[in-house]
Amino acid sequence: MIKDIKNIFCVGRNYALHAKELNNEIPTSPFLFSKPTHSLVEANGQSITLPSNQGSVHFETELVIHIAKQFESGMKVDEIVDSMAIGLDLTLRDVQSQLKQKQHPWLLAKGFKNSAVVSDFIPFPGVEACEQLDFSLLKNGERVQVGNIKDLLFDLQTIIEFTAEHFGLGKGDIIYTGTPSGVGPLSDQDQLSLNWGGNEIGSCSVTMG
Ligand code: ZN
Image (cartoon, rainbow, N blue to C red):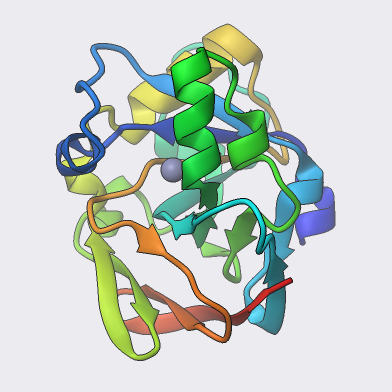
């Protein structure tokens, strides 16, 4: 599945409480960045190696949508999205803070190898059904983040149209739609469970390499 993924787009600051917890302003238009495809890794029970010598690696748990076809004007979310996953937009937080100070791009903090974790992709049930279920991350058995796309500042339709307009959007692209509050650091041997509606659809452990 992940070998067919083309572009990886990510939305920043798309939940008000998360923007606040990092002392960021709430954006007035969607805020996007991307990751290289080499950053992709599946949460299929395996151990994932992360950098140990560049400061803290934060988890950001996000609903990830998979695009089924070329976007055309007027297309609705339920037509263009065929599957979804729960993902981790892993972030070198200390590196990101330094990059922000220097007003440099975020690639070093967001695009490192294994920084784009995805669970299994499951059929997309539609926006309305999605809003009935929460996604969450369990770290060593404790629920550390929970989110629901009904709290998005920019909803899926807006994100899709914005991405298509500025970058193009087509079959095989995925979008990380933003993280709710509760982000935090990972440690060696952490066990992670990615949940959708209370069911685990991805898991992995962490090796700080
Ligand atoms: Zn994120």
